[in-house]
Length: 219
Ligand SMILES: Nc1ncnc2c1ncn2[C@@H]1O[C@H](COP(=O)(O)OP(=O)(O)OP(=O)(O)O)[C@@H](O)[C@H]1O
Image (tube, rainbow, N blue to C red; front, side, top):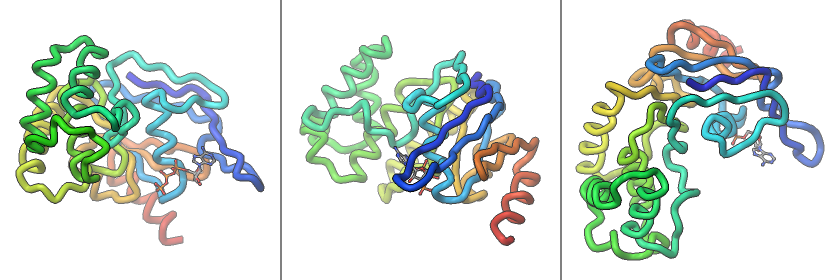
């Protein structure tokens, strides 16, 4: 479970305050995957980072009682000067998992062959995003945090394997996706919310959320 209680967050832009959340309260229970619709620049990444514990609220309380992933695509835990092998084994130890399992899972999923033993700094952006996604899937969380859908990979074999593993994980896991596109949320979510003007409006279905979002977008 993730619960926000009276959470506020804003940034000083040099001229005024950009309000991301203003006294917001909501809860995401296990099994109730949530999609949050928000227009670009409203604070999607900030919201996901707060759920992951990467950003602190200015006020209020965020409670996490489950194993919550880092945001999909987040490279913060990965060191560029070390190889994928070293990173995978180190991160496995941090999470109390078998390093042999995590290394071989990531090798299989990324399909980057001998580059797996080269420094991550030498990878293309596609290779990096495949590696960080494979790590997230190797670690098995209760709640997966996804910012704007799947990583854009042109590797057909990776997309096939990653999609298969993700579907398997989602049978037991809960997903929170933030996106500006309702289509991204359709695949994953049972309930939906709209984020705008520092507030989060919760709905039981994506259809209801889309009505408010479309109204906002077109008005
Ligand atoms: N550390 C920061 N300092 C100042 N302003 C920030 C900071 N982080 C984010 N912002 C501002 O807060 C707003 C929301 O940023 P955020 O990246 O969360 O939005 P987003 O909805 O994910 O954006 P996009 O759709 O463009 O990816 C933006 O105007 C951004 O410039």
